[in-house]
Length: 189
Image 1 (cartoon, helix red, strand yellow):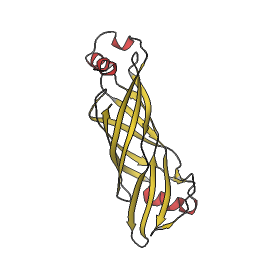
Image 2 (image 1 turned 180 degrees about the vertical axis):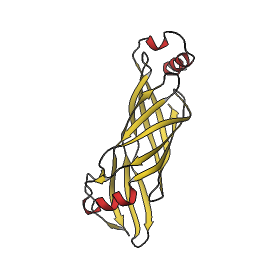
Image 3 (image 1 turned 120 degrees about the vertical axis):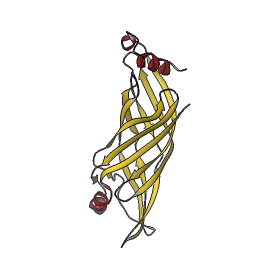
Image 4 (image 1 turned 90 degrees about the vertical axis):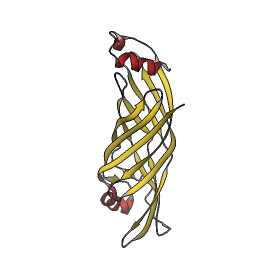
């Protein structure tokens, strides 16, 4: 049992003084795989394998860390245009939250788009193409236990795109909006 798991159990059953205990941050590492569903263009992306480096402060039972995922490729047939493909980079995401009495958290992700092709022909979107503001996802535990792993889910919105040249309004119109979902499967190790 890791120190974080023990602290979570102690905090979760309400032992007096558990939240007042002091201690150094405890490092946990998780392997991350998953999927995200982008609602507006109806596209599914496989994510990972990546890594979540999590640091938990025992005294406050708060955590912060970084979720790193490799770029994901997506191809979608757009009526009247043809096959549009590209590479989406989600993150690295900054995660923070609490493990006192259970897991609550969120992550903030920069979203970048690169290597866009229309019917196989490269379409220049520039080196800084992505969402104008990072995407924020609430991380809801679905069988997730600190120190062991499990699933974290989220429903999130994607904002407007910026720095994509002439493709900026097209990407905003085709991708931005609510109702996107994220499922991350974490395995301690």
